[in-house]
Image (spheres, rainbow, N blue to C red):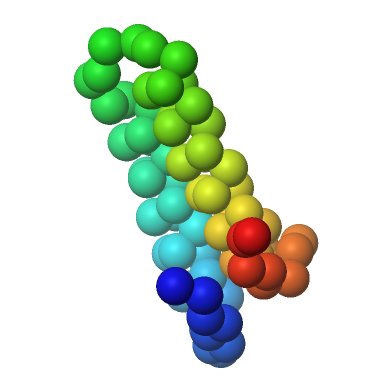
Length: 67
């Protein structure tokens, strides 16, 4: 699903979303799975997606739709 969503949020709402993403990153790191290369690849992909969202919310990146 490709869609662009433009919203206006307050600085407090922005901080709340960024804190939530930090929590999500921690939950990805703490998932109890046996190590396999596929699990590691999936984890890194999730980290990348979280980092992209953080960059967008921080104003360090413009929203782009991944290919």
